[in-house]
Image (cartoon, rainbow, N blue to C red; front, side):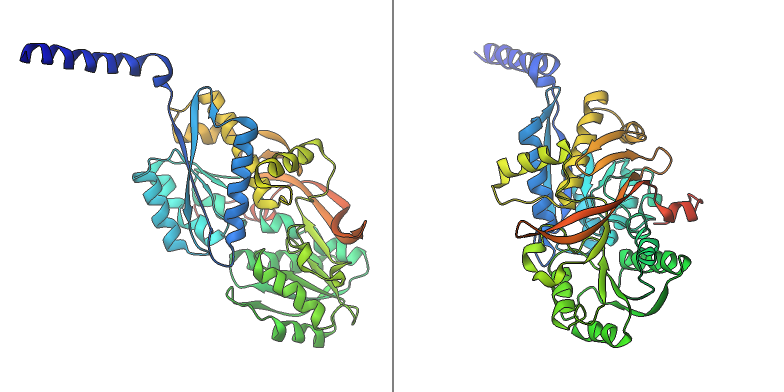
Amino acid sequence: MKKLLAITASAVVLMGATAVLTGPASAKTFKLGLTAPFTGPFAVWGKQFQQSVEAFQAANGDSVNGNKVEIVYRDAGGPNPAKSKQLAEELVLREKVDMLVGYAFTPNAMAVGKVATQSKTPVIIMNAATGRITRGSEYYVRVSMTLPQMVSPMGPWAVKHGIKSAYVLVSDYAPGHDAEVFFAKNFEKAGGKIVGGARMPLSTTDFSVYVEKALQAKPDALYMFMPAGAPSIAFVNTYAERGLKKAGIKLLGSGETQELFLPNFSDDVIGTFTSFHYTETNNRPQNKALWAALRKTAGPKAVPDIATLAAWDGMTLIYRALKKLGPDAKGMDYVNFMKGQKLESARGPIVIDPDEREVIQNIYIREVRKVNGKLVNVDIETIPMVKDPWKLENPDRKSVV
C-alpha cells in the first residue's frame, strides 16, 4: 500500500512538472506595482490612474500573448518620499513586481531611484515632473511631461500678447521651483518683468494672503503653479474672490484648469491662459477612443485628465514591450526597447527620447472659454515636439538622485 502511495505521489509530481513545461501553465503573470495617492487631498491622482488602467485593460485585455498583466496598488497618501521608498522595496522584494509605475509627485519618484537601480526594475513615471528625475536612475522612463517643458513656452507667448509684467506664486517643492525658474527666465528673456512672487508651503490651503500681495503689486498677470487637486482649485477660486480679474490681472498657469476641475469654478476663470501637453477637448481619434473607453468602465460622467492620459500611454508602452520581449526579459531590456518608441497618443504624437528616456511632445497654449454653456480649454497655439529644456541646459548625465 505504501509503495502504491509513493508511485501515485511520484506520478502527481511528474504530471505537475509536465504541466509547467507545456500548455497554459507556462504563461507568466507580469506584475506592475502602481504607487500613487489614494487617500488625502491628492487622492484624485490614484483614482484617475486606476480608472485609466482598468479602462485600458477592458479595451485591450488583461494579458499579452497569454501572459496575465496584474496591477498591485499601493497608497503613498501624498508627497511622502520615505513611504514611497518603503513601498517600492515591498513591491520589489515581497510582491516580486516586474515594473514600478505611477508616482504623482517628484519627491516620491526620486525616492525610488536607488531601489530601481539595485533591483534592476524599470520605473514608468506617470506624472512626477521635475526635469532631473530621469537622470537619477537608468531604469526611469517618463511618459508624462516635465515642468520646464510645459511652462517654458508660456513666457514668450505672454510677452508677445501684451503681458509685460508678472507676479509668480508656486508651491514650495521641486516642480514648483522648476515652474518658477523656467517661466521667469523665458518671460524675462522675451522682454517681460517679474515684479514679485513667493513660494507657498505645499500644505497651504488658504491662499488669500499670497493672492492679496499679488493684487497690490499690480502686475499684468499672475503666474501660478501647484499640484492639481484641492489646493489648485482653492487657489483659482481665491484669484476670483480677491478681485484680481476685475483689476485686469490675467491668470496664467499649466494644469490648474484641467477639465476635471472646471466645474468647481465660476465664469471668472474664463480668459485664463495655460501651457499644457493635453487638452481634453481635442478631436484626435485617439482622444475620442480614450474618452469612450474610460466612460465605458468608470461611468458616463468620468473625465480624463493627465493622470488618465499618462497611465494609458504608460500601459500602451508596457504592453508593446511585453509583446516584443515576453515576460522574462531583463529590466534593462525593457528600458532599451522603450527608448525611441513613438506613440500616437490622445494628446498628440509623442516620442521617448532614446538618450534621456524622456517624453518629447507638443505643448499647447490654451484659453478657458465657455462653449455651449460649458467651461472648456481651447487650444489657441501649438509648440511642436518640445524637448525638456532642463536637460538641454544640463547636458551632464551623471546621476542626481
